[in-house]
Amino acid sequence: MKKALILLIIALFLLPSILAINVTITKISANETMIRGLGNPATFKLELKNDGDTDTFRIFNLIGFQMSPESVSLASGQTKQIGMTIYPRTDFDYKQYFTFIYFIRSMDDSESEQKLLIKVVDLEDAFEIGTDELDPESDSVNVYIHNKENFNFEDLTVKFTSRFFESEEETFSLGANKRKDFTFKLDKEKVKELSAGFYTLNTQVAYENLSAGIDSKISFKEKNLSTTTNKKFGFIINTEEIKISNDGNTIQSADGTIKKNIISRLFTTLSPSPDSVDRKGFSVYYTWERQLNPGESLNIIVKTNWILPILIIVLIIVIIVFVKIFTRRDITLRKKVHFIHAKGGEFALKVSVYIQANKYLERISIIDRLPPLVRVYERFGGEQPKRIDEKNRRIDWSFEKLEQGEVRMISYVIYSKVGIMGKFALPPATAIYEKEGVIKESTSNRAFFVSEPRSNKDLERDE
Image 1 (cartoon, rainbow, N blue to C red):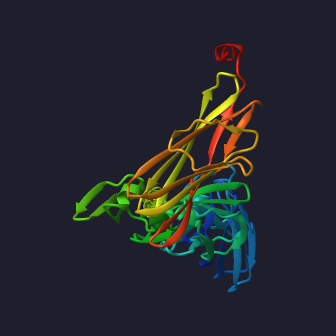
Image 2: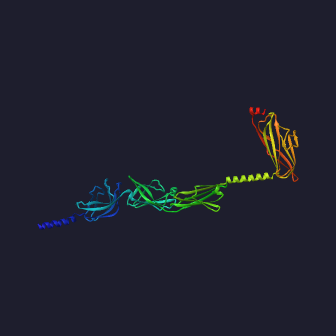
Image 3: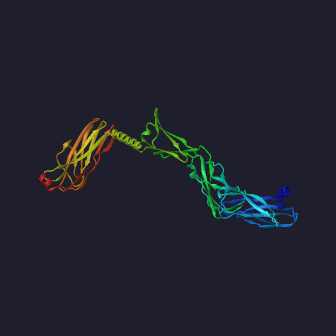
């Protein structure tokens, strides 16, 4: 009984050695990555060495994965390399690393258990996407996509989207552990408005029946950059424009100052209103202070309108000129006309001429001409005329001398039997005089009278 028990124990220890398969398996190289949800196989390159007799070895697993090849024949001492392909089940939903156990069995039913490590990743985990640090003054940015896995992607579609740029869809092949670089032009208008920091680059990838979104970071380099432009134009309406722009990607202070004197400030308009006004002597300083975000600008417009002061100056000059001309005249004649009611109902006007001597004058003759269709009334007010020439239609007055500042007035009445309607014009009076032995001449203004139709009440009153 003891002998039988000892023999049984020895047999149990020796059985695995007797049944163990006599073949050596070495993994040479492998494409060991599966993309989860894609259903792609994992392929391993194995080297098999038959250390026993010629045999055919069957390869199988117990978890329902399809394998290829299913068997391999080896002569005694033969070494052969095979590519083992493992297809996952349709319900296989494993992630990260998976230990695949398979068996190799000889014709005598001896077998060996083998293990292979398979990496299972999602599509988005198969790639690394990054960019260079983005400079605000750059016109482009470099972007790369790196295939981290030992898997060949054929016809991979990629699209990049960010706050700085947006690409079109691109389709290309990306081999195992390979990298592809892209260069994209930046949207400068968008870049101007963005602050320094980190931004998201979204990459949409699509391969066969799978698609995924991958987010990575773009580092936007901090840079202080501002520009100031100053324009001046216009003469009568003088305009000065100051533009301070924040072309960097950080918040910056913008200060602008305009200097005006106490005269020009009266005719100056400012847009926008200054933050402070300082007066120093005869100068006035206007100051603007702003905090500008990236892409913002401060536009200052200062307009000085010299039209009003120029008009005032011109008016003053004209007044001075007229005053000088008026005061330089030796004699001033001013003619006026007034309508009067005649007893006989005739059209009658009283004509008055005011004579003012601005200097001492001698032998002065005043000549006034009569308009057509009128006659002179025989009575005169003030100075009596020297002569009435009805043929030449003129009246003459004479003065031996006039002292400086002396004023005389002559007047007379003209009438007409024929009614006159409309605007009635009287010719200017003329003065001929002698000053310091020189004979000179001066004229008066023209006098006008507007005649309007008279009512029956006016006619009855005249009667």
